[in-house]
Image (tube, rainbow, N blue to C red):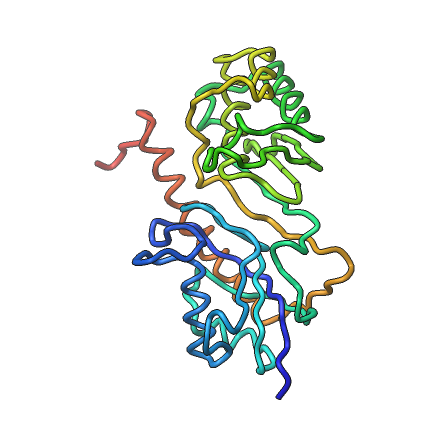
Amino acid sequence: MEKTRYIFKFYYIGSKKYYGSQRQPDYPTVEECLLNALKERNYIKDDKKSGFEVASRTDKYVSARGSTFSFITEKLPILMEINTALPKNIGIWGYSEVSRDFLSRYNALYRHYKYLVPYSVIFCRKINSNNLNEMMRACKSFEGRHDFSNFSKREKDNEKTIRDILLASLALEDDFLIFDFKSRAFLRQQIRRMVAKIFELGLEKINYEQFLDLFDPSKTYSYQPADPLGLILWDINYGKKVQFTIDAKSKERMKKFFMQQEKKFSTKQKLFSLMQHNNISEKGL
C-alpha cells in the first residue's frame, strides 16, 4: 500500500504528569504518549522513517486545544482506534491528507494562543477601569514587528528575537482576563512574559513608559513569566490548503472529557471560595 502523510489536530491538558509536549529522555511527555499510541495501533514502526513531527512545543502545564502533528503511514487513519490507546487528557479529533514534503511546523500560517486567568487571582480587589484600559492599550502595542528579546527566555546568544505579532488583545469576560495572541512563531516563554508585564502594569508596579522600555533590546530585564496553567495553544492555522476532516466520535470524546473536568473543578473552586470566608452558615452543628 502507498505511504501517505497525514496531519492531525489534537488536544491535551497540561499537568504535572507531563514534562511539556516535546520528547525528553526519562521523562513522560505528550509526544511520547502519541508515539506509543501510534506504534501500538501499527501506524508507525520507526520514529525517524515515519517523519513524525509536532508543529509546536509547549512547556509543562501548558494545554492545547488545536495543536497539530504529522507523519507518514500506510494505514488510513481511524481516529478512535488511536484515541483508545491514549489517556483521556490527550485526544486526536481531526485529520487531513497532505503532500509528502509537508512540514506541520514550518507550513503553519500562524499560531493562536489564549491566556486566561480569573482577575481576582491577580487583583485582590475589583479591577480599576483605568488600569484595565491601560493594560489593553499596552497589549495592543505588541502588534506588528518588534524585537522581543526582553519578552522571552534567552536560550542562544545569536537567537533571532524579532517577531511579527498579527493579533494581541485583552478582554474582561465573566470575571476572566482573556488574552489572544496570533503569530507565525513565538519565542520560548514569550507569551507568558508579555502577560506578566501586562499584569505588572495593571498592578501599578510599572508605568506605561517603563513597559515600553522593554522593547529596547539594548537593555536587559530579569523577571518571572506568568503561570503556565493559564496558557492554551488554541489553534494552528494552515489556510485553505489544508481542509481537516473532523471525526464526530473523537470530537464527542473530547467534549465529554472537558465536561467531566469542568464539573470536577467547578466544585473544587466553590469549595475553596467558601473556605476563604468566615460567614459560612453553621446551623445545625
